[in-house]
Length: 148
Image (cartoon, rainbow, N blue to C red; front, side):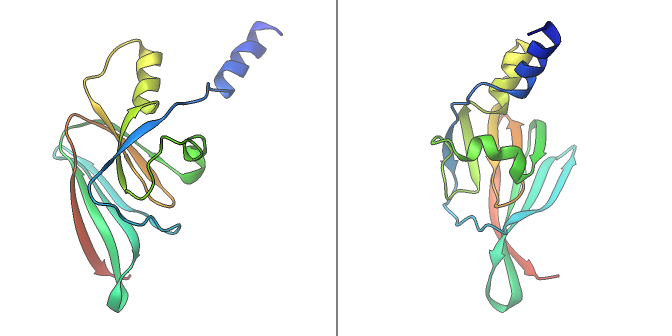
């Protein structure tokens, strides 16, 4: 195998991840059709609104999640997360998880060869997910809003 082929193989076949997560907040059922309704990043931090399911009287049940001290974040579709879903370390039934090891932060430490003084959070829905580097825990508030 020549050097170019070896480099391509390294980039396309990441090593198996040993993901470890901890639940944060209250458990909530993650419906397959749940999703990130909105994402807003400003000097005040990162704000997410999750649509988790339908409530009574045509209301959407959801969560507003706010991170005050974000240094990085990325949105991931369900296909981007396939390598995580089959791992035993991914806690189920919580929309907010703290990643202890094996996530994006560990990948960045390995690639950049430097330590980050951040915590990693994973906001989970049935479709999109958001990975966040923040020094402190998020604020999570249940919300409802009319459909449409």
